[in-house]
Length: 485
Image (cartoon, rainbow, N blue to C red):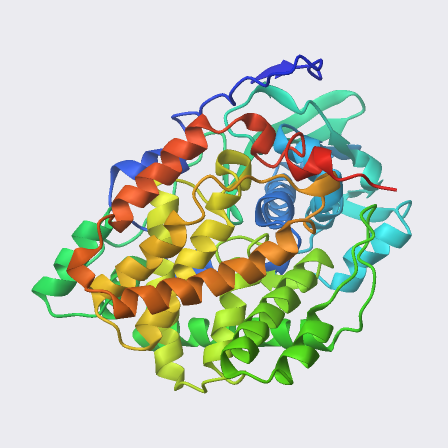
């Protein structure tokens, strides 16, 4: 891993180095989709799946590895260090990466960590926490999480190393990568063994062919693969989806009920989900009311994320307001569709997310915001279409339309915080998903000129060619245009 110092201002930023071909997230693009729902929809603290959930999973994994080391090895241990590189170093402060990393290394998991614990690290950053390894106990603080080089030839833009120390000597060290959507890898990573999909596909074209041949909906084809790959029953998979559904509903409700306040950080951004919701309910015209409610639901979820509270990656934390808004609007917050329709929508949305992960990226640090809000909007369009029993081609067309009209969207968070422009982008992503659904269900499906696979390829190409300033580094766009007082 080649490191560089902070680059001087030259007026130009070189393109980010390509991802290492050794990463499993790169290798997976050469075979069929193997991702399953309980890997994809993750519950954890915001504000970022790659900068919060991923690092917490990484440090928790490292702590568990250290606990399994031989006793004579652990007898020499005096501490642990976590080093952040690339985008994690550049914008980690605004994402709360150091708090997430510390939480993981002292034994807390993303799905169950108390938001109050993370909030407490903001108000009392000098706290220390005992960590027991073998017969020894030592204290860790936020100072043990080190913001290292932001620029360099890293295997992935979100690279970090964890070290077990004996004084200044490294006893054990492992390099990790937070590859987007809360997924993690490490040097020498080997993916877990899984079953083979009943309907193998690596493109939407192949998935549509399976659906047409066996006269299946996209949700049915997706469920068959979930059962085959994960080795679980349909009942087990539905139970997991129901849990994710309930979590998303609770996130939206919590965001709507939260009083208007100023979010943490230097932007001093005011929350507004509750106000938008109240005014939208009283809108005179139905279309305006519906649009206002969807926007309010998305703002509610995204503001919860900005607070660092628990959210669901769909596909990321930064885009965590989009799908919950649509789930709530088709469920108890609006249409009250039957639970099975909601489950089917989740499966179709997941298939869209899988394909984007497989053939492009879900990481803002790799592909800009098109990879987060764009994919979330495409997933949302598929969710709505499938929930309303649209044909597989219409589901694919809706997803394509939503994704196409996010191509090129940059990731330029002001001050490195997932607030501006991130929160409102979730509202626009949700509304675009509805627009894509409306267009796809009113056009002649066969007449759509651009197919989903082409648009995913375009997103991948745009990601590769996008200036590194616009990949979650806060070095361009709004991040350098907004004046903070």
